[in-house]
Image 1 (cartoon, rainbow, N blue to C red):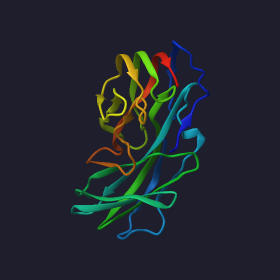
Image 2 (cartoon, rainbow, N blue to C red):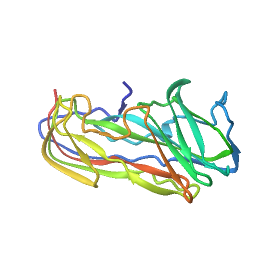
Image 3 (cartoon, helix red, strand yellow):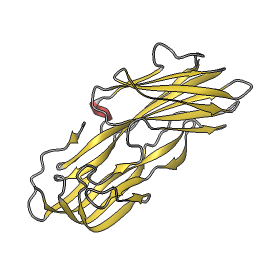
Length: 255
């Protein structure tokens, strides 16, 4: 399991927690000239990113979490009729997902390709092809955290205020946001019991950290998920992730 660590936590009874999490801006590329997609699977991926340390969120002391990456790819159907876009995701040259989506004539299609977990040095690739005249010209990479822990599993957090914000803010091309995914906040250890968080903060008088998920996970987890959104006007046209930006509370117990 890939885990990103902050500095070591020295927890004692009643330790005050006020931790802010900063996210790196996405890496975006808009091609000067669109590239035509092949009509069969290419030997090499058109889109490839190696995860770098500069892509990672900055975690404060005492916070550890898994990392997930989103690769955004935008293509356009320039054919006179509807066509199908095919895509294959690979992590370190191993296939993680394959899929396809129909695209109306003249429409852009943005595919969000999600890889979880990831580490620095991982190679994330997306192969694209279509059954007609389609082109691609935009790509981006964003890395977020999921399953954050404050202290060890089964620790107790009191007076918890959990802040989230939607990310990333893509600026290349002609972007628009199709929606925002929720955060799943687990409220009891050992059970699949959680609240969907789709607002900027949530408060609890006391929380026992889930032994596997900590303070929860975004709905882009696990690996293999893709979202795709079509638009006659916008590219990228995409979902934002709701991710934690600040954790405030009091850590009572660590084992």
